[in-house]
Length: 67
Image 1 (cartoon, rainbow, N blue to C red):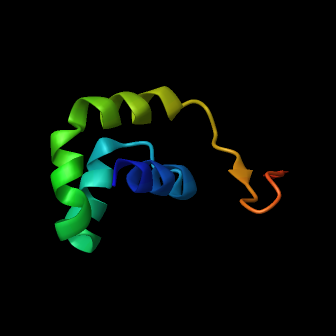
Image 2 (image 1 turned 180 degrees about the horizontal axis):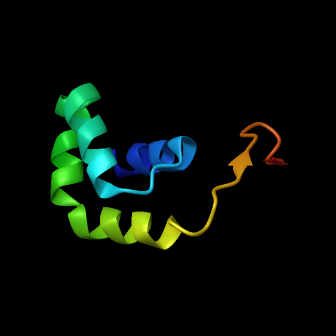
């Protein structure tokens, strides 16, 4: 589940824990919310570390970095 959440963070360019919580509550409550709530320290550290580093999109089939 945590891997799915991190993937969503990357794909959506989410940088704020509050935005992640809002998504978990409104769209994926039963699936994500327990993990988002219990992994607060990890997720806030991950989000904080990526605030100033833009994500690069990667083609999953080829591994190519997309602009």
